[in-house]
Structures are given as structure tokens and as C-alpha cells.
Image (cartoon, rainbow, N blue to C red; front, side, top):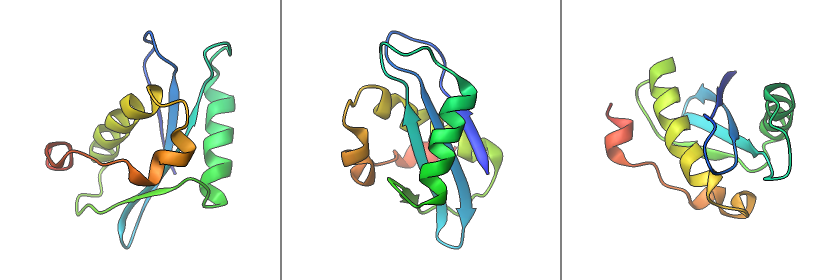
Length: 103
């Protein structure tokens, strides 16, 4: 399982977990609340639990199955999720910029 933790900024921090499969990359996330202290361990546990239960997962079709590709996609997703307080309701409608998929 691949794990990405967003960098600190003015918005909430995000943990993305994902795994490559036959269809491309499957990912899910955990978002730290504004009042919470960010913890990589807790973020990873929440996101991994959602991933293992297939809750709030997004399937991204991609041919490139590298760690660098995952990091590009996760960074793009983290930016979207950090701004969305209801990301669990919206995650399946997120889109990844084609430019991100081709880098």
C-alpha cells in the first residue's frame, strides 16, 4: 500500500493511501480537522481502514504504475480534499488533470 501525507499549509492536512490494480490506481483519504493535531499514524490508520473496507474510494485509470505517479496523483487529490469539508461525499466525483497523469 502506498501512503502520502500532504505538507502543512493554511488548510487541513490530508493522508492519501492507494494501491495499483488491474483498472489503474485505487485511492482513498483521511482529512485532519482544523481543530485536530495532525498525526501521520492516525491519518494512515483511518485512510487504510477506509481503503480496506472500500469506503470512499476513487478509481483512477492510469497505465503508469510507479511511486512517482502515485505521488503526483496524491498531491493533486490532497489539494482538492483539503479544501472540501465534505470530501467523503464528493470523492468519487473528483477528477485528476490529464497533465498530472502524464507526468
